[in-house]
Length: 364
Image (cartoon, rainbow, N blue to C red; front, side, top):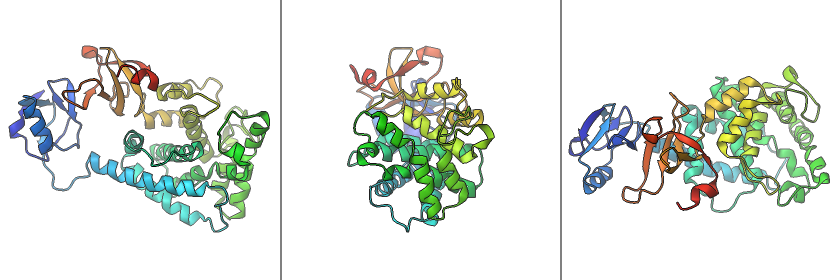
């Protein structure tokens, strides 16, 4: 590992490998610029040298990590308002078109194809002005995951757009149900559950009436079908289920089991992935579940974790070379502020287990 004097690093430099403080704590990941503010803070803390296996370079034009996150944040904020309007009861109109929705999905694809991990970092820094309903957050997250899986599977652009539109509308039939069922504000009764089972058919009927492409309508109808024939509404299995439906089925199921709902406690992100990896009842297509793990990584961004040295942290970036050792932001180091480490087996920096939000916040 090379050492670099802080005073000799040019402002705006980008290191080709993580930049470390005292050979353990990460100061900057690749494509994060070495700023004047960082240099000043380091010297104030009496750190005169930093370390890296990479070399610094200065580029006049670069799509930095900060730029990508800003782009994703701006899109996410506009997208959530669009989806909120889309799912407001009484707002669905006959002029809802595939073309209009395809434009939104195309914009999302542009960001996801650049780096889909950036989208998964958005919830770490973005807080909506008003609390969103579960249905809206479920739709947004499911759509982003589905598109990321599609990119991972190298689907062509036209198929990605069809997949994204289907994911965006897979719950649209819920707007036709009574508000007491639609808004998920209480525990569901047996009658409520029976009503919910009709939403794929309601969605399908709405979209076919509006002349949406057949692959989109079919995916919306089949997204609750399962490989072993245990799904609904047609009890299809295996190759009878469309590829889009299989992707949306995995995406929305993962989101559903890792999100808090009034009638069901959420699994943590890592446990949610393990559920799909085990796939004990063979409900899901193995190719799609492997793509899900590839997209989210073994320890997903946003997961709270306990390290072997006793410190708590939150996963903020994946490690494509070794998914078991992501980059974690530590807590409880007030003098330095935000500190990031590359988890590793050495020096007690491996992850012991995931933490719930309550465990993470306790004594933090």
